[in-house]
Length: 245
Image (cartoon, rainbow, N blue to C red; front, top):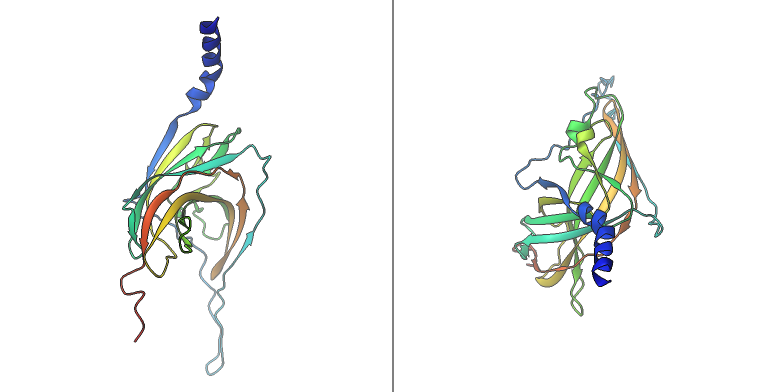
């Protein structure tokens, strides 16, 4: 009975189809993100006149790395839905619309707040934890083309103490994010290239102290699902390839 077989297949697929939906859109293009974090002021220096003196403030950070596990049921695919313009001057930001799709078989919790500053406790001396998600645009060479190593990103933040700043994506669900991206590196001469979406998901601990802070960052490694490229033309800032006088 072909009809009954088709009906049963549709019935089995229905939960997946219902979960395949957009659950949030975030527009960063007109947002001035607040990312500064506070720390207590440095104590008063007791330097004596005529003697050398060093300030009491200091800062530091550490990045703890790891590696993906192919058996991890969590996975993300970062799609570049729109890049405007596709003729990109490295001196100017360009607009990118990202689609962050849960391509795994397990739910994954992601930060969705534009403002890191809003997650810090009111007491600037208190340490706190937060998550960060960098949505990355990575430039690569065209096949048989010259080398390209360009990168830019926008970032979202979240904290377990601010439930509205975190969101759980179930398998098949996605969020869209529009933002202005500026390349941190660009080829020295105009070149055709391909952009692809990537991400960094991290858990961070901010530890303030008088005169400075320490940040411990741990990379998280849900699997990265390959997504299609977007063809672009990259140009260095005007005059950057001219010989220096």
